[in-house]
Amino acid sequence: MFHDPIMMADRDSDDDSDIGVKLETRPKTKRPPLYKVMILNDDYTPMEFVVHVLERFFGMTNAQSIELMLTVHEKGLAVVGVFSHEIAETKVALVMDFAARHQHPLQCTMEKE
Ligand code: TYC
Image (cartoon, rainbow, N blue to C red):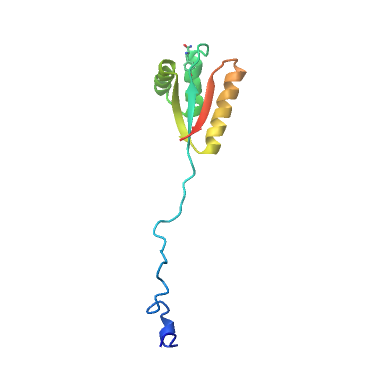
């Protein structure tokens, strides 16, 4: 009876072979980590330049850029966006290169969220 060929068509119906087998309930779709891109305050970079950077590289309006630049000026730093590792790295490199080419000490960094 245990391995009766008639019962074999329904393999799990009576032999307890599924004890201890946990079926996966949650799909394993791990999201990639996200990274905060930040700009830091300094005493020398002109306010207008920072506003231009925020418009040019982070797609902000002039009003949004002025507000965020003033937040950085007052608080020391602010998150300007959250991106995948590759996009964050590219934004940081573009901003740092743009600032250096204009001889401003503006710093842009990234950090895992
Ligand atoms: N503190 C600068 C000034 O007074 C302005 C500034 C703002 C610089 C934001 C950098 O990320 C920055 N000219």
